[in-house]
Length: 171
Length: 171
DNA sequence: CAGGACGGTCTGCTGACCAGACCGGATTGA
DNA sequence: TCAATCCGGTCTGGTCAGCAGACCGTCCTG
Image (cartoon, rainbow over all chains, first blue to last red):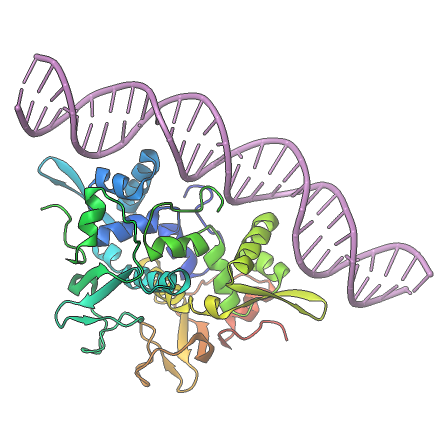
């Protein structure tokens, strides 16, 4: 493992997790995967990061089994594997904490259980069903804390309309 | 914010959260805080990291209100604030994912609800009480996936005995 | 078959991380 | 009382990772 990305001697699953997803940009890439982003150029546009780093991160994620490279209509696509999808609760919990800490006007995004239309509570469980729905059963929409000056490019616009989590952004 | 630590233009609470706790070592420092570590030298020993970086991370965590600097018996101590303690669900979720991905022999650490003695399920809720207990109600102990060659220094030994989460390591 | 979109790689620079030296104040022991 | 040690840092020089931007091969399209 590359220097600066491992935590030697830590007998701890949090350290192991961070060796897989703790590098800069990695969790944001995975978040975009949940939001339906699949193509190299779309990650690039939406995350506004360096191509070299994006390329390296995607390769590492494929290598560690969190993403799968698929070819669709001559285009490369990066799709979450089961391991990658299993990260959803952690991503959701971090997002909720970020809302609470940095968004006094309320959540930036709201997630609802699509089956029953009920908004999730902060723990990620559906108050109507009493269980924690998997990401593919969720619908997301902007909340009261979302930016008043949103970005204009088509990617961001598409991601602001209410949509199903994990549904591909492009047909 | 220092270059390389921010995510400009991201109207996303996950990005904001990562600006606060996404740097290398930061989440491991906070994990140690939950485990009762409070002193500079103890973090240093247990995490085996550079003093300069530890110093910078602690200062930033104090500055962002996740830790509080306290003086106890002439010694500096770093203690979680309410904001810091609110990070527990995210830390727990990431740890559970790390267990699932990297520890085929079972969890490295097991958390139980101290009130009723029941082990938590993967979502962090107590199956007996039906709710998600806060960290101060939890007891931790090594699980079947913990290392067979554990580290020998007193810090690590102390952290391997069953103990209450958030309870100070030193009296 | 020319042009552009796509999915990268390469390059030179800058800033972050590293180990280890150093340091001042407080406590402890002789 | 004074030296030694512990504690909680700061400083330094070297290395590595992230950055913007140039470049490049492949595929599709008009």
